[in-house]
Image (cartoon, rainbow, N blue to C red):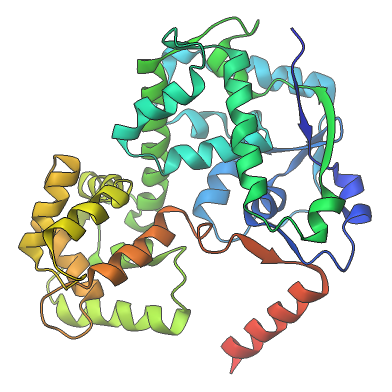
Amino acid sequence: MTLVAPKLPSVAALDVERKEEDYYTSSKEDRFRSFASCEYDGQIYMTMQDFLESITEENPRPRIGRFKLRGEQVVNMLNNTPPRKKGSKNFFRSVLGRGIISYTEYLFLLCILTKPKGGFQVAFKMFDRDGNQRVDKKEFLLMEEIFRMKSERSVDDSSSSQKSTKSHADFVVQETTLLRYFFGSKGRETLDFNTFCQFMDNLQTEVLELEFMEFSKGMPTISEGDFAQVLLRYTQIDEDEKQSYFARVKDKIRHETGISFDEFRNFFQFLNNLDDFEIVMKMYTFADQSISQAEFERAVQVTTGHQLAPHLVDTVFQIFDKDGDGKLSQKEFIGVMKNRIHRGFREHLKSPVGWSGFKACVKHEIKYSV
């Protein structure tokens, strides 16, 4: 079976094709390119380690160019893929640099990270196009292509970069670690709903564990101040304003209790239900008025069916309670958290490059160097 998919420009062609007047490109594509460390057969790939770092780090590790993989190296990588029956919350960390991920798979994985558990079945049905309760390789690749096309449409169609950097030539799909993991060495295995859900849940947990361990340093809890830093990461709040948030937490929480990983994970799983939470709050309150901790906890329980730790809820209120009235501006909270769960991509769908990007960079450096 021969499958085709659109081809991203090769590494060599990228600098030639992208001209100085190409002001905009997809921020997701930019991030993929900046973190992807491998090239094979004219295509750019991430390793599993590259993907995890693109989610948890602001900038990629320093490197000189991309590593050009040979055919036998790719074969060895694919043969290194763990069996699906051994799937765990350490799948990506167990493979690291010994596996490859394509651009369309990167978009798919980003989508998974923002899906609530209640949305897993919807996602599965999107893949299961023939309705047989199983997803095969062809269905999976077709859905990945839809993710890619949706991402491309988020960029202004009038941008010249769309005309110069996109090549829609067809090519035979290169097998990747994810395809091997899902569909086996012959590509004939299928995914059932439970396996699909377990993969999504494991990936979310694995990324959250990495973010938690960055601050826990091997300890069972992180401080409330550390939690504030994780919570405001990837948001559009400027650095000066973030410092005022951190200072508020430090001043109001005199005795640190600490936040465990289970509490941390429960909160971020709640954030993946933020759209439902917003609907509940609009029904529950009047004209986006501020809410109390009791109202917040009630809305979370209605939305997710679970309760958040009272101490964690209190910490969230201390972070966002600017006037000290003990209430939370739901409009501000929801706006900031939507940026957080989408890791900055939601608002910044366009990213300047070329001369425009250079000028923006200079302005940013001047602003924060004085």
